[in-house]
Image (tube, rainbow, N blue to C red; front, top):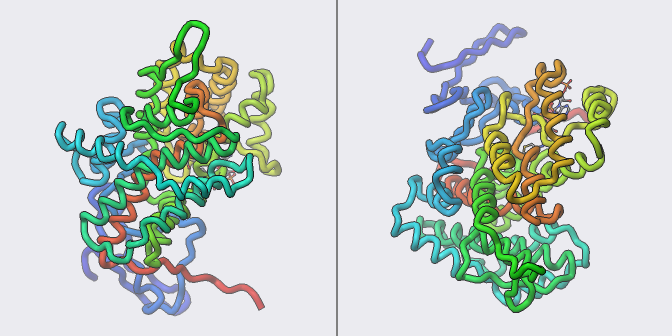
Length: 427
Ligand code: ACO
C-alpha cells in the first residue's frame, strides 16, 4: 500500500481500490476520485457537493470550524480594518498588496474605466419600470460581452487583468443604473473625482447635474464614515472560495464562454434567498416579526420541522462557528450606531433573535450562527441604500472574487468542462 493513497473496499465483491490523496497547504486533504468510474464502474453521489472539492485554488481559505477567512493568506479582519477595498482587489488579482504607487495607478484606472458605453445606457430603458435591479444587473452584465467580444483572443496575463479591471470598475455603475431605472430616476454618470465607494453612493443619491440632496441645514455631503463603512462591506464580500455563485462562474468558464457572461450567471446564482439574496430577506423578515415580543413565535416556527420557515441570515454550509465577516459587521453596527442612526427597533429584534438562537439547543446542535447577511441589512439601510439594492451591493464586492476565480480557472490547464453525472431513476 502506497503512502498518500486511500483504499476503498467494495463490500459486495471484496475488491480493493486505491486512490491518490491530494495534500492541501491548509485545511483537509482530498481523495482524487477522478478515476473512480473507470476503476469501479460506479459513480459517487454527493448531494449539494458537501464533501466535494471542485478545483485547486490559491485565492481564498476558509476554516469553517474556527471561523477563519483569508484572502491570499491575509486574515479578513486585517484587510477590513487596515486596507481599502481597492487594495483588496489588487491583492486578489496580483497575489500581493500594492505599494503606494501601484495603488494610485490602479485606483486611477478603475476611475477612468467606470463609465459605460452610451449604447449600453439604452439597454436599461428596454426593461419594465419596477424591474428588480438584480434582474437588470445580470442582463446588463451579460450585455457587456457584446461590447468587449474579443475574449477568445485573450490568453495572456495582460488580457486577463484588463478584463478584470474593466468589470470591477463598471459594476457599481451598472448597479446604480439598474437601481435608478427601477425607480424611474435619471441616470447619474460616475464622477471620476470620487473614490470607488463614494462614487457608488453618489450615483445612487445624486440629482441630475451632480447636485447632492439639499437639506434645510445645508448641503448634505456623503459622509466619510459612510464611505469607509461601504468600503469595508465591499472588502468583506470580495471573495468566498467555491460558493454557489462562484461555482456557477467557474462552470460557465469551463465551457469557454465569455467572462462577463460567466459573471452574469454568477449574479443570477447570487440572487437566491439561500445565497446573497438573504440580505434583502433578513430585513423583510425582521420587519415581518415587527417587535421583540414576536421573536419567540418565529424561533418556534424556524425549529418546527413541518414549517418551511427559516431564519434568514442564519446558517452556512462551511461555517460551523461564527462567520468572521458577521463578527466584523456586528462591530461596524456598534460603531455606526450613533452617527448614522441605525434602526434601533430592527436592531433590538435582531439582537433578541441572535441571543435566543445562540443559546437554543436546536441552533447549537446544528451549528447555526449568524452569517454575513444577518448584519449587513441594518447597515445598508442606515447608509440610505434601498432594500432592492442590498444584493447588488454584494455583487459589486464579489465581482472581484468572481473574475479572480475566472482567471485562475483559465490559467489552470488541467481544468476540464464541468460535467457531473447522474443516477438515472426514471423508466
Ligand atoms: N433556520 C432554521 N433552521 C435552519 C436554518 C435556518 N436559517 N439553516 C439551516 N437550518 C437547519 C435545517 O433545517 C437542517 O435541519 P435538519 O438537520 O433538522 O433537517 C439543518 O439546519 C442543516 O441545514 P441544511 O439546509 O442542510 O444546510 P446547508 O448547508 O445545506 O444550507 C444555508 C446552508 C442554505 C445557508 C441554510 O443555512 C439556510 O437556508 N440559511 C438561511 C438563508 C441564508 O441566510 N443564506 C445566506 C448564506 S451566506 C451567503 O450565501 C452569503
